[in-house]
Length: 634
Image (tube, rainbow, N blue to C red; front, side):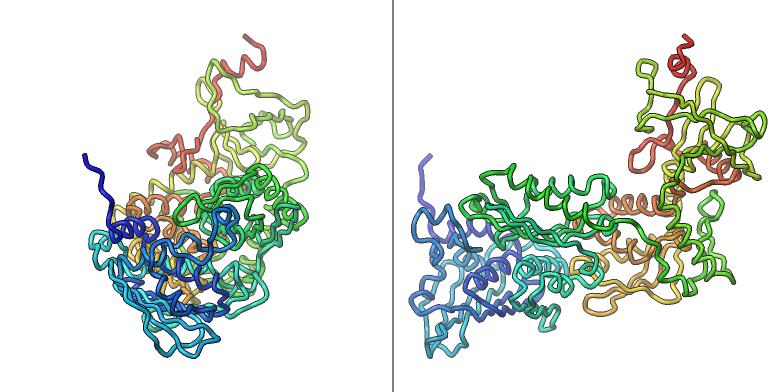
């Protein structure tokens, strides 16, 4: 097979395939060039999600005729002159192939002028054709216009998503570029309509508020740590503010947005034990490191980097995060802000008896709604504080006499690990006795009790069965919700006063593109401004159960925006699981005997009742042989 030297236009198209994935890639390359040119104001204009036009205008240093003539030349750059420069990259762009690659798959045009010159210059390029610079009127700075992206590569153009989706990617890309440069003003327009306006500010926190809203920027903790080699600054959310997707973690190195597993691991470790395993802390972290200590030339998009001393970077970031979390007040507080409001029908804070989905979707009105709301808020606060002493709660029928003390059993540390005859759980018996028995007037059937308001203990002919009440109820609700969806959509409760939330472009696109899916869940939202959604309808299953419509929808949108190409049915199953989890009885909730009996009765009819929708076991079975071994009776 003969070896051929590829023509320049084909080389550029190959390079474009590595660098230019979609219109947002063009925004990234052009804005990075503007920032490297010293711009303090950058305007981004987009048409049809970037398919028709991406234009970036800046007030940076501009170019003269000689520079303009080389702008579209392959591997032409002002940021590298000698080989040693590759090992100390101090700019955002440096490879020199971006403009040439972009021009190979679009119609490109540059208009530029240096501030000291009277006349500007313009140059055009399309496919493999590059024109000569021509004098033109122009303001100081540069405007680069890219039209008809992928016009000569229709196969790649077909892979572009919808206009709204592509614009959401552009908006997200601009946010990554604007966050580390709060002193630079940004403006983004789509189809001649202003979407984002970010004035130059002195505070990173203010830039976050301008981008994502007050609800994100207000609940942030300052991070600061300085090492001779590494400086760390940033803002992180409290554990309570953790989100359902990792896209709210922004990490920057020397002003460049990066993704790094090492740094993500440090974030997870810092928050371990503070938030649930399926939640992701909000973080805006800015690292400054000697350019000689990091290689940014390991990926064409420059998003991945390689550290010379990975353990040092990981250790310093982990220490900085732990210092911040350790000195911060992270205790939960009661939310009484809505106590004076009259909730919508059904939002009384009272839990219906555990039974069918129909009973859970009831929404009776209440004259004492305000008082119930206050009591529910206080109860939630008190439940968040652990009791001074552990207590074993059980119905009276299990005790031979009401005053007979029973020993307190200490269960295995992980009660979800099933036991087997060959591997007995380390069941130890405390010498302390419970001094107080809670009398449940409405007691469950003989041989059933509730432990620590979290586990239900019952028995069979040859075993003791311990049930996680939350996991079991979650499975029952999930099964019933799937059955209800097979017949139609879930019931929704219209809110008397719609609740609003600030969203990103990606979240707004997810809400619009998945409106039918949300409707099947009983959720209805409408645009309420450029970056605001109004919740008009909320699932009846969740009303009156302490679930915030805003927080629930935010978590739903996080999941939808995380995987835009996911199969709708798979997405729906994940959302049903989340809905069932929110509606199910929680660990720590005391149950009446009627509720316990109802839960066990419905468990007998439920499919896959041995595990919750997330895969956690619902029951732990200890055979009599296991117990006899622990008590040395065999």
